[in-house]
Length: 241
Image (cartoon, rainbow, N blue to C red; front, side, top):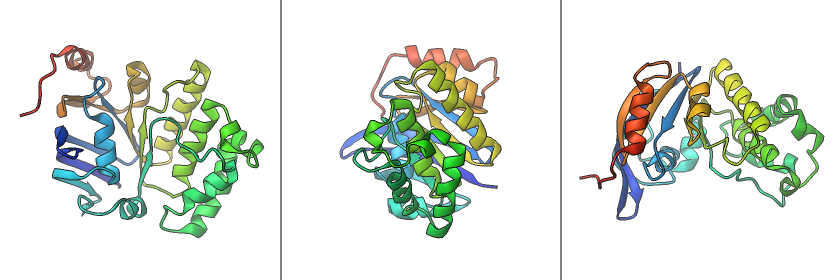
C-alpha cells in the first residue's frame, strides 16, 4: 500500500515562511482534501512535496523513503505526480505531444507510451483532438489533458491543485468522476480546493490549514468538520511564530 506522509512541514519562498507546521497522510485508494482560505499555505505545501519549494523543517516520505532532500525529478520517478493550478499544458504542442512529454517524468517510458494510449480510452475527447495544439482546447479539456499528462508517468500519488477552478458545472462533474476513478484504481490523491462542496464530495479525509498550520484532520463525514472549516475560514490571521 502506498502512503504519502507529511510531518511537521515548514516551507515558503526565500525568507518568507508560508507553512510552519503541516501534517497529513494520504493512502492508496483514498482522496485527502487539503482545505483552507487563500494564503493558508495549501499550494505551497503541494509545491514542497513536489520538490519545487525548499523544505525548511519536517519530512516528506513515500512508502518510508524520505524524499525531503531529493530533487523534483527524483520525486516524480519515485511516484509523486503533480497537476498544478491553472491547467498548465504546453499550448503550442499538440495533445499527443503533451502526453509524450509527460512520459519523461516516469520511471518507465515504455510503460508511459502504453499509458498514453490508455489516456485516449479514458479521455475520449483527447483522442478526438490528439493532433490539435493544446491552446485550441477548452478550459475543461485542458484540465483533462493536464491530469492525463501527469498520469502517463504512472504515479502512485497524484496531487491536484484546484482542478475545478474556472470550469463549467458540467465539466466539474466530469473532473469529480475522474477523481473517483483514480481512487478506484488505487491511487493516493491529495486534492487542494477552494470549492468546499466539491472537495467534500471527492474526499475520504479532510485536512484544514490555517496560517500554515494543520488545525484539523478527520474523515469527510465527521459531523464536526463543517465547524472546523468555518473556524479556519473566519479565523483572524496571525503570523506563525
